[in-house]
Image 1 (cartoon, rainbow, N blue to C red):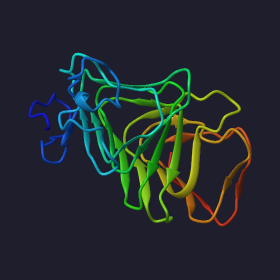
Image 2: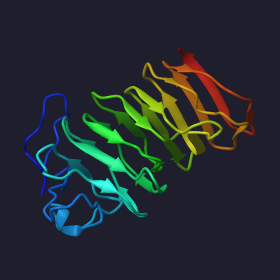
Image 3: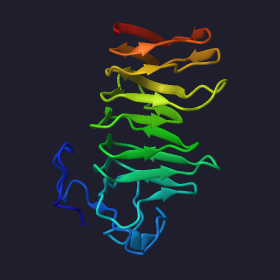
Image 4: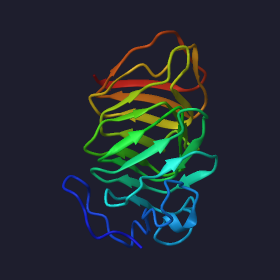
Length: 212
């Protein structure tokens, strides 16, 4: 069951395309409680998730196993990951943030052979981000402003396979250690400001700069 009420700035989303509407029907913030979702089931990797501001409790991820296809956070809504234990949210579609994403010390793993985007009207701070996209030509394109909060010496961005394309006016330091870009891994700066604290080893991978 999706929501037909959309805030200004959020791309039109239909109940069909975003069938997993967060309702907090169980009266808690637990992502993994089935009755907190309009479809009365915890989202699977092919389920599009919509988080509205109208829910009395906003979702929190405090365990392993959170997955979805695309996810949209409405204006006034939020998604929170644990600040004490590192868990992973695996996203196989697009990430749209028009509200608040509290990254905690969580990892967001973008995992799909299809192109994906990070977008929205709000800047998004990630703690750590993984890119796992099978082939170089599969792109994760960042269209909205992002930042990373993982402290040094952590590398906040790990590109295992696929292309990370920064197309927003973000200022990031993605690699703080001697990062290694292997086969089928590409970092593409297309509009941001990127600094490096250390060397990047390119083992059949690619670094491209077209703007910024």
